[in-house]
Amino acid sequence: MNQIHLVSRILTLASICMIFLHGCKTDSTDGKDTIQHIRAVELFPEPPRPGGQTDVLELRCDPIDTVRIAFIGLGMRGSQAVYRYTFLDHVNIKVLCDPVQENLDQCQEILREANIPEADEYFGEEDWKTICERDDIDLVYVCTHWDLHTPIAVYTMEQGKHVATEVPAALTIDECWQLVNTAEKTRKHCMMLENCNYDFFELATLNMERQGLFGEIVHCEGAYIHDLRWLNFDTNGYWKMWRLKHLEKEDGNTYPTHGFGPIAHIMNLHRGDQMNYLVSLSSDQFGMTKYAEEKFGKDSEFAQTEYAKGDMNTTLIKTEKGKSILLQHDVTSPRPYSRIHLISGTEGFAQKYPRKGIALEPDAHHFLAESQLDSLLELYAHPIAKKIEKKAKEVGGHGGMDFIMDYRLIYCLHNGLPLDQDVYDAAEWSCIIELSRKSTENQSMAVKVPDFTRGAWDKLKEVKYYE
Image (cartoon, rainbow, N blue to C red; front, side):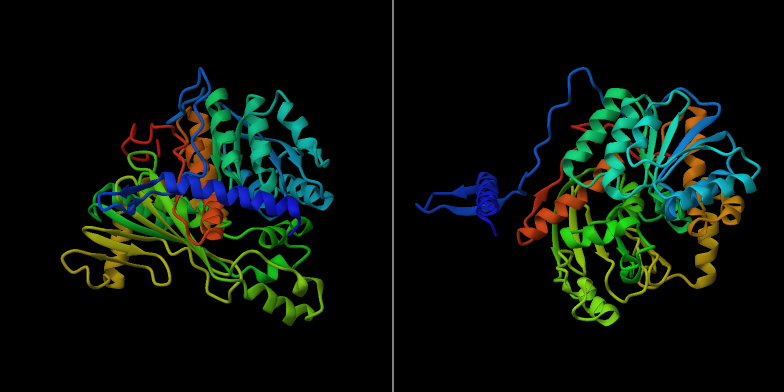
């Protein structure tokens, strides 16, 4: 550790200690200071809202007859998105952008097969700025590596366009505030493309919560548990192996939104409740090194690399209204895929993994029989899912949920409706990345979650998907 880094680390720890001590209440009646209560550390104070700006809760913009779209990033997610959009009405694919010519060629072929005119091509790594400046674009759809999500989203809104960005929308608290402030200033939509909110079971449990089937929600759980070791080490998997580099640099929950998004809407976060603080803990790293040694040899570059990311991260969150949330993240262990998706209320319980099941009072000690479960899911199928289910399953995209997500985005833009997911969702779900890292680095210290609505989290009473 060099001297400059050491001094910086000491100053950071000293600042944390001062904040920590400031948050403690003491009792000196017996001549000794004893801690009565410890508050979560506010590492990231909420900046004041810039003058002249107001919140964008349930933001409505002018309807767009035909949404003219630019796709930036045409790897695995981007090329799949281009394919799905060939099945949507009220869209015009104007621009394709990617530094890899093969990806551009593949997407142009997708357009040709759908009898759609070829789009304009861009391939320079800075061409996204030129695209955002064009006056014939309504929506920029971002599927690049994580580091570009916020810069492109911010610049897009500054140029007067709406933006939809792949997950996560931001990597730091500062980037989260950039998204919020720019959306409030420009009054443009900024949606994070959290597809898991649109899976059929998740939509059904959202509808069940709205109908009061679970009573009052007390606790929810979500996760992203996905063995990605092989993909991280595949040079064709991620462009310039960018995702592997994040595992080398960062601990904490580096990819929280797939598990968190659906339960955040079920719990009405920033529409009646709000995250208060979190604590986070990671195991040490074992899986990446073991896998690299077995696949490439102990003396290989991959095996000799130090990976900061612990195998399993567990984050606990407490809300303003006393509810609890558990989130987990593990992409380096040989385990079956799971997003958990667990909902526990005063009248019932539901979970998706490892066994899909629902239990309800007066016999909530047991799961419903399979036939009862099927009937219940059919009865409480979300209206949006019922409306688009057949086409969604035909087009595909993680079983159809990706298509429902895209359909909803265009439907709302076309009709001038508030989007299902707003910029505060993007900021809240993404902020867990840095907050969990800070907590993990400091022995699971309780860290306050910023209120990105700046006090308006109780202005609305529930999440609404407008029809």
